[in-house]
Image (cartoon, rainbow, N blue to C red; front, top):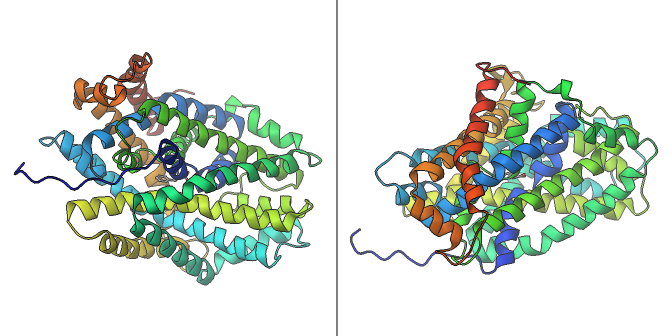
Length: 456
Ligand code: PHE
């Protein structure tokens, strides 16, 4: 190093700020939109059991590992690998992560745009007096005529870009700190209404009573992919945020708190959705529209539905925003640091690329690109599958192997104990999960998915 002192990195300003930002990344459409429809598509309770197991045994160790890489490397997702292991090709893991960020933002931005349409519809009382069937066709009509979805998607990408341009502390930390707790409260209100609907019991049974005969290789892969997606793991988001965490914050505790918050919100979303799905006779495996059809139905059955509906979709949009911010931050931190371009330029260029891929996604949902398929999936389905179910777990596999065996015991210890100031009796347990359980677990799921192994 030729004596250049790197500029002081931005830092999260408080412990709660760190957790709010990381939880803000984790909690999003993955919990409230994707989790319920994955549960619905994959047979209910058995999926939930797998999911919880994966969060605990694989997700948490991967999150600890990412935080350690980021804080030790003090750089973006690619630069941190290079800083720690300059002579080996581990930075490729970061490159896969940046690619995954583009892919995820593409379809995620589309759904995020839907939330804006639903804010608009709530505001003009557009769900009023509609039957479950009518609410279903309202959603289909909206999605299949791509001009409006494209407009909202563009607005959403611009919103994200403007926060990311403002930087970590001013932009990201400030908003998530207030808005996450409010979201939690409103889901509680939804739960109360949903579980008291006549016929709600069948939904709770669907969610909580596992039928293990529903488990097959693809259900297992989806549950693993969902755990990674929901926790924002395997692609460098948490590495990037880890690089902004102060030296005295406890990484393992942060990982456990963030994972717990994320999991609790996903399960709460499930408890809010499924009783209503069964009470209204909605098909639980209808896919991406599930939440957008079910939630307005619940609000129809509630005093004050107008206000709650408006509030809910605003908060859903905000939850989505704190996640798209973290996706874009991975990309922008990389391009601005490694290519020495300004944050502003990096944000604008990458947003344009995201908008382009995102448009293709949106046009593949009922629009002109519907029949264009790659490996039997439309563009959207392909990007969603490849990013969430393949690239994230693959990234996670490399990350735990890196931290477990290649980063160097001294560095890892230093990060997990804050240079010796934390006792950390659980650290050997964490390391055992990182070195053995998580990598073997992910590998088994992959082998099972490609049919080289058979269990379940
Ligand atoms: N975890 C986010 C959600 O659940 C999505 C996300 C995935 C964000 C990967 C960043 C990285 O909505």
